[in-house]
View 1 (cartoon, rainbow, N blue to C red):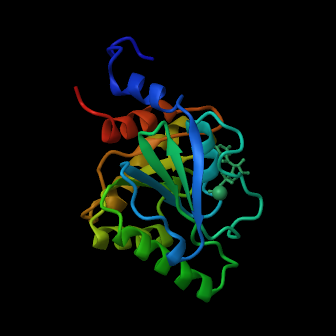
View 2: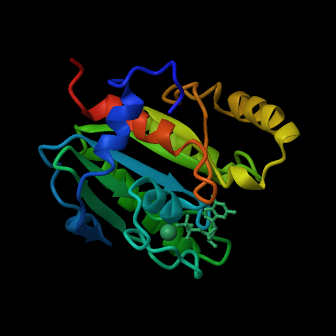
View 3: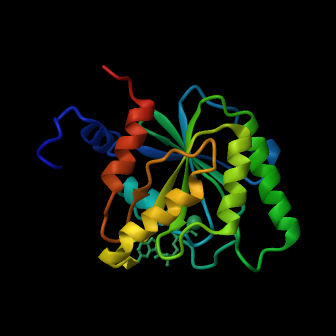
Length: 216
Ligand SMILES: Nc1nc2c(ncn2[C@@H]2O[C@H](COP(=O)(O)OP(=O)(O)O)[C@@H](O)[C@H]2O)c(=O)[nH]1
Ligand SMILES: [Mg+2]
C-alpha cells in the first residue's frame, strides 16, 4: 500500500472486505430465476466474453475457482450472484458479444439484463470490463446505452493490462475517455487492471468498499 494512504483508507477497507468469506448464492439463466434484490448493496460486473471477467472476480476475492475461468466463451448465459462478507452482493453478468452466439441468444442476453436492471434498487455500480488491448468496441457501446437508459452508474475497468506496453497506456485511456464522454451514466474515472500481475486490484476493491461500507 502506498505510504500516503492512511490505514483507514478505502484501500485498506477494500482489502478487508475482499478477505471476507465469499459464497455463491444463485445462478439465474432466466428472468424468473433472478433472486429478489437482497437487503445488501450490490455491484455487478459485465463485459464481452473472454474479457477476463471470471479471472478478475477470482483475483479480487483471492480465489482460484469462484467464478469459472472459461475456455469456451459465450456458453454460460447466466447471472451468478456471490455474497461477500455479508456486506455486498456481487453479480457476475453473462458475457456478451461472442461472435458465434446466435441472434436469439443476443436478444436473450438483453432481455435478461434489462429485467435484472429493472428490479435492482440497491445496485450501486456496474463495472464494464474492456480488454486493454482492444479498447471500447461497438458492442460495449450498445451495453453502455442500455445502462444509460437504466440510469445505473457504471465504470470502465480495463482488463489484461499486463499485455499493454507502457507507452500505450495514455493513448488507451484517452480513447476510452473519449468513447464514454457522451454517456450520461458513465463515471469518468477509468480503472486499469491485470488479474495476472494484480495491477489495480486494490483500486477496484477500494471502489467497491467505498460504495458499500459505512463511511465513518
Ligand atoms: N494476460 C492476461 N490474461 C488474462 C487476464 N485475465 C484473464 N486472462 C485470460 O483471458 C482468458 C479469458 O478469461 P476469463 O476470465 O475466462 O474471461 P471471461 O470470459 O470474461 O470470464 C483466459 O484464458 C484467461 O487466462 C489478465 O489479466 N492477463
Ligand atoms: Mg467467465
